[in-house]
Image (cartoon, rainbow, N blue to C red):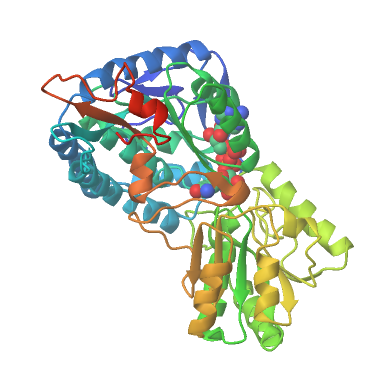
Length: 503
Ligand code: NAD
């Protein structure tokens, strides 16, 4: 690694790297071979408070900048990302997380546009000016930032998901503190270099696990929280924020359905399903996990899905492979538990279902397809977050929709069909924050991203993603002071007419 020692226990504060004061550390292991790639600090509450107080100071000036100035600087961040060499960050992501290199560099290549998008959106509309209710009274509302926002990030898309909320928060006039996952802190620290363009102290990064995250969420000096991660942690953060009336966006997990209709174009549906089930070893919040396949095309679909899945190359992310390791031993153990439970209840393993024989060092697992799965099995109720596609045969499109909605999650949902009628029906009936017809996994900076039901509260991206980091203030300004006719004393008319009076 050039100019960066991934072994030191760094934090990013005031546009510089500092060695953390914390004596507590966490070893970063490469999930592909269990090599020790670096050490991160587990920042204490006291250190977190010091960072917050610096961010708070920096925000005092930033919130007073005009929107055009803020936009100019956000565009500079975007240019720095576009013009920079992202390969070092990508390599760190591969070493820490196990992500295949093309996916790591692909993630980074998509980070700049959100800064440009929010730079202009915050400039485009700063509030609301409705018709007045009283002649001569100026009645309006403007947006104001909250203060300092905390960004608690998951391991799977550490940089782009951070950019979605950091860009919005900065554009709204806040300062940010990022707390990456323990599994992706080194690449996040390295990426912080792009924020050096900002006034010092506006974006900072502290490392650590649950305790560091809690210190941020519970601090009275953190004014808004953006969390992306599991349902369990998301719920505890939402409760914690509710206690302090602190706004929080909770982007939690899912167990997305994929419907293969009898009208599905199988030449497209099969490769689409292989991608949506196994991309990043199934560790995408919107991976397709539960498959509902119409009986008319079931045999052909399963045979082709299995054949293509068997072609996937498994290996470390810096070698030519599509399927990297899972992020941790516990992640792989969960996948094994779900598969074993399904098989013991009657499911069949069509392919995979084991640790690859030539890759026993890291946390690899073969892409696995299960058939004969029923809705009560744990693999259909829990998020596997691994390379497992569980297939149910269905007799009708309506049955597929019912089973797809039979879940506590509601993040995304997909369908392959060439029927226009089914496409719109699926969009309208599926209970999810995102529905994809013939094109799974795609997102758009300009469209809200987030889940229904247990999959979360609030939205990232789109206008809602910006509004999450700004609050309105209604203003009524009468330049000429006048006594209003509805003030005390009340007239006899009001007492005896039987009618109220509109103001
Ligand atoms: P996780 O919930 O284990 O951890 C997420 C973050 O929370 C980490 O930074 C972790 O250190 C921190 N954390 C853990 N306990 C905490 C606590 N008590 N208080 C404060 N912070 C705490 O999730 P993960 O394993 O990193 O990521 C995988 C999960 O993220 C999956 O469930 C996936 O579906 C979800 N995810 C959702 C989206 C979305 O947009 N909805 C996107 C990506 C990932």
